[in-house]
Amino acid sequence: MSMFKKRTAALLLACVLLTGCGENGSISDTDSVQQSSVSEPSASADESSEAEGTATKNEQSGSLSEQISVNDDSSRSDENSKQSEDSASEGTTVSAEQSSTTQTSRSTASGSGTTATTASTAKTDSGAKTTASQTTSTDAGSQKDPGFGAKWSNLFTTGGDPVVKSDAFPYSYKSEDVNVQLTKQKYGDSEYYIADIHIRYIDSLRSAFSINRATGEEEYGAEGGANYQEDGAKLSERVHSILTINGDYYSGRKSGIIFRNGQLYRNIPRAEIGAVYRDGTYKGFAKDDFDVTAEQNKGLWQVMGFEPRLVENGKAISDIKTLLAGMDVAAPRSGFGYYEPGHYCFVVADGRREDSVGPELQEWANFFETLGCEGAFNLDGGASSQMYFMGKLVNQPTTGTSGGVIRMLPDVFYIGEVG
Image (cartoon, rainbow, N blue to C red; front, side, top):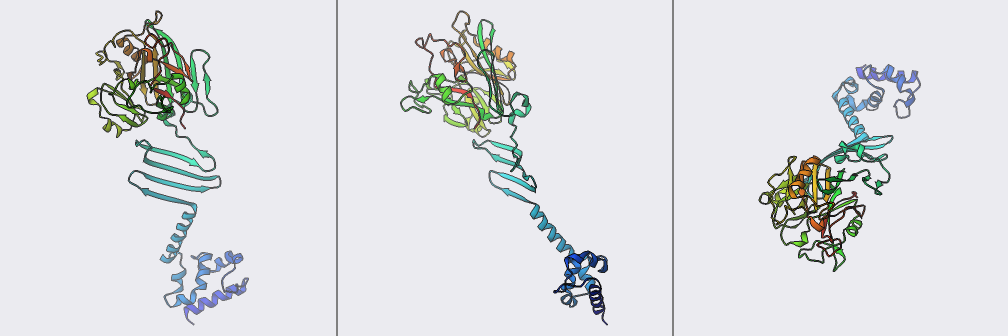
């Protein structure tokens, strides 16, 4: 009797002696463990069953031992195929490359939901290139991008409504993304209002134009003029500002670079520049050193162009130059200070009063150095120097040049919540 017939007879006999075979000749599921004990030592129950069902066909191509051996190459292929199918059921790996976005994503299914880990390099809405890594869960919600706030987690709330104090100095505002501490102090012969600002995202540092009084809509007024002015308190309320400071008074002149919230409105160089970028950094420029197109490619976010620069590399500039006559006299002033990405200050000094004459320009620059600012830039001053907290005017602007009323503003910088 051939070797194949002997093995077939032995297998059939074993099947009958134990519990019998199914109608199609395969071993029943309940007997798979017992059958494995009498099968070839190196074969699993599933592999033995498969081998028996296909024994006749396999006789023509080779010995049975080659077909049922666990170490057989075809068995490895089957196992690899099965592992691939199992892997596909457990998770999916997707890789995609595009001209502006490259993203790799991995998802793993679990009893509590799907957890996805994503690392991506992409262009943001404003065109700035960013890299982000975050973990999200479809059941548990998204883990918030810490932004700049990762360094100052104790300065932000963990949820709920913002905590606001505005009945007396110091004023304060604290939420998940914004922290403002507003104090008042005497420095020299002047009253200063210092707003120390921490933000989680650069989008909280924004600019706004006044409405066009002819249309009632907010817009940039290329031609300037009285139509493009608005009461500071109403403007602050309209844009839901937490903290507002006057801007450059751009409508008072036809030149100067106007670049706000990532958008270019006017590109006519006039004076020195203070620039804030999407990564939270700040840099001051001499007039001839600033190329708005080049800086846009680096993620430019806001431009201040009233002039002059006040502080560079943590030191007050000692040879301040300005195009404006009379800038070196004591006067009300407004300015922007930079500490590090996400940490800034707005400062206003009252002037033209007996109890607060206002700082001269060098004194103004020195003050930002004493605050510890790495960089600082001067904004429009005089009757324009105004600061608002939660829509309320906090300083005492001079009105001597504005007919006894508070001057209306064509533009502001402000701090607001994101989204």
